[in-house]
Image (cartoon, rainbow, N blue to C red; front, top):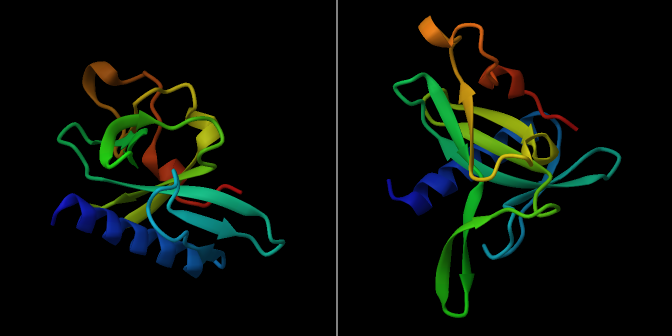
Amino acid sequence: MNTKQIGTVAEAKVKANLLAKGFNVAEPEGDYLPFDLVVITKDLRMYKVQVKSGKIKKSGSVNLKLIRNRYEKGRYKHDIRYEEGDVDIFALYVFDLDSCFYIKADEIKQHKYCICFRVNPAKGSQTGREFRMLKDYENMLL
C-alpha cells in the first residue's frame, strides 16, 4: 500500500471504532485541515481528531509522529508541527494489532516530533524506567 492508502485504511478503522463505541463522526471535506475527523458526543460536544497509523517496531514499541504535511501555494510542505488547538485527540491505528488508541493532545503537547508507546513491558536495562504503555490508550478519553 502507498501512504495515501495507509491513511485511508487507518481513517476507516478509527471511524468504525468510534461509531461502534456510540460516538457520531463527521468528516471535513478535503484534506487541508490539521484534523481528519470530528467526534460528536451524545451531549453534542465536538472534538477534532487527527488519525495516525503505526506498526510495531522490533523494539516492541510504536511511534506516534506529531508532524504533518500541508499543501500550500501549489506544493506540499513537509514536517509541519501541530500547533496548540489544531487537534484535540490523536487516534493511532496500529496495523499489527488491528486496534485503535486515543491520546489527548494536551497530554503530549510537550513532545515536538514523536512520542513512543510500548506494546510489551520493557526488559533488561530498560526495566524500571517509566514508559507509556499503548494498552492504556484503548478507550476514548472524553
